[in-house]
Image (cartoon, rainbow over all chains, first blue to last red; front, side, top):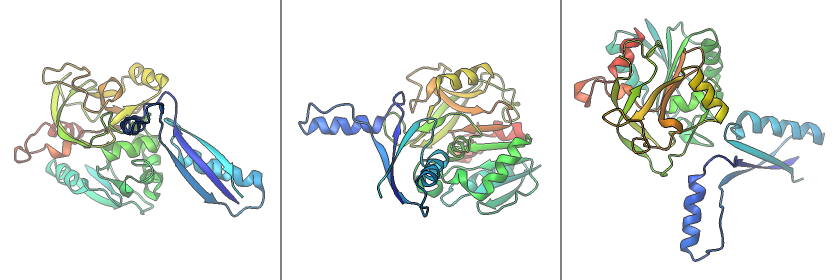
Amino acid sequence: MKFEIFVTLKKDVLDPQGKAVEGAIKNLGLSNISNIRQGKYFTLEIAETDEHKAKQQAEDACKKLLANLTIEEYSIKKLS
Amino acid sequence: MKASVIVFPGSNCDRDVQVALEKFQIATTMVWHQETELPKSDLVVLPGGFSYGDYLRCGSMASKSKIMKEVIKYAGTGGYVFGICNGFQILTEAGLLPGALLRNNKLKFICKDVQIKTINNQTAFTKKISEHKILTVPIAHNEGNYFASKEEIQSLKDNNQIVFQYCDKEGNISGESNPNGSFLNIAGIVNKNKNVLGMMPHPERVIDQLLGGTDGQEIFRSLL
């Protein structure tokens, strides 16, 4: 089973990289683009036929390594 | 006294800290991250560097290495653990210290001498430093911007866990003396039990006049 995972900084955590990207975007003349936040994207495959179990394993991976819950949050979506 | 220095792939201050420890007659064993047993130690040091090339998040992969299970157990029994720079990042990722270290607010790698004020000199790591003493110690990091939730910051304050804060030469703790955007100018903290210290500045780089300073000696002397 294939999943995609987005890891993003929590709303109240400053994102200086996102800010810098936003500055560059504005320099390009794309002045109506704002609030850029940068995050991480993962795809992964889980050798499991039960979707519920597979999703739990993906959750486990997020909580234990892929995201740092002090500063980040995650979302998981099944791809196939 | 015996110390173990944990070496991860990408550690680069491991030998510096070994030299510093041995200068104070602390017998030091280097321990590779894949080891599953910690030698009998009075102190465990997580050195600076770029473990796993800082992939994913600084210190995240190192915090899951085999030897870290032992280090977490060791800290749980009251053993002294000292993380410097990347070592501090690993300690937060391992859950031994609260909070996280984010990108520096100005997005630049900073390598320079800074002043830090000794806020808590009642720990095993700072007991021979006089109260509020200002130390000059170098920083060299890209992710030293200390962040923690409001509740965690309150708990750090309530339990006297803030050990070092960035300050100017006169000891003023202000926005101007904050090199990286850290909450409350935090440069180093201990856990609630005061047996785990993490700090971004590198005391092992200022242990001899030949290296440009000796203020780092005060921490190693405190450990004896």
